[in-house]
Amino acid sequence: MRGKRLAGSFRRPDMALPRCCIAVAFLLLGLSGQAAADRLYKWVDAQGRVHYSDTVPPDAAGHEREVKSRTGVTLQRIEAAKTPDQIEAERRAREREEAKRRAEEEAARKQAAADRTLLLTFSSAEEIERARDDRVAVIDGQITLAEGRIEALRQQLQQAQQQAATIERTGRGDLQQAHQRIRDLERQIGEHQSYIAGKRQERQALIERFAADLARFKELQAERASTSRPPR
Image (cartoon, rainbow, N blue to C red; front, side, top):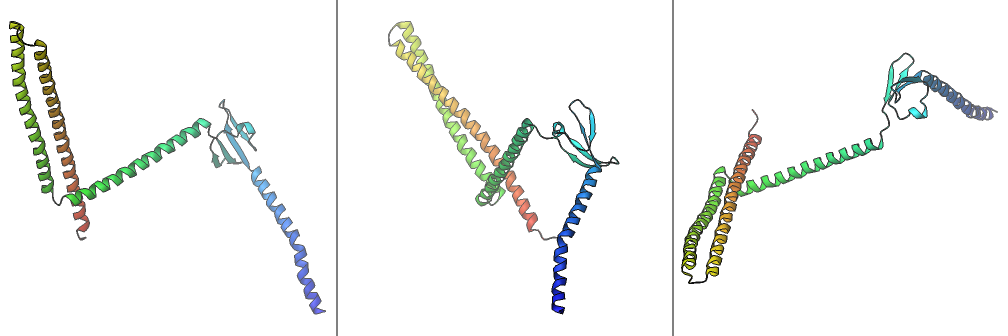
């Protein structure tokens, strides 16, 4: 008999459990309903009129609004729904930021590679200066040779012009061929002048590039020295 009473005592709580759950559910529903009743929604319509309501009508769902307590305390701010144009603008802004981030990462990667090459190529600032001077001397030699060639061409041009004048005066000789010779010499002079202009630009760019390399090399040396210096 005692075993039966024990079994029965275990069955009774199982039967009472659903009633407890139902009671708790109704209590929670009552509390949530009371909390909802204690709230107000505030929004401003397209005409600038301020509205307060227990619920938000469908035509106001897209407006920015505030959830307030009955005492006027702001409990929550809900942003207005974004228009398609705003969504598209935000998407483009994110794409620009992502492109900027990728560009910065690529620039940092290239700079790191250039720094490694610079440190592997030169061991001192003096080496960089000697390399610069050697490269500049080569370009200066090329310019000097081109200037000498221009001087020789100008002398030939002067002779060709005198020959053409003699043909015009005497009528003896091929005047058309003399004029063609003048044009050829003038073209060659122009080509050498363009060559010299390009070499001078190359020379200036070379000097600027070596100046940047030298400045960067000194920065890297200073950074290396600061990291290797023992703390005080």
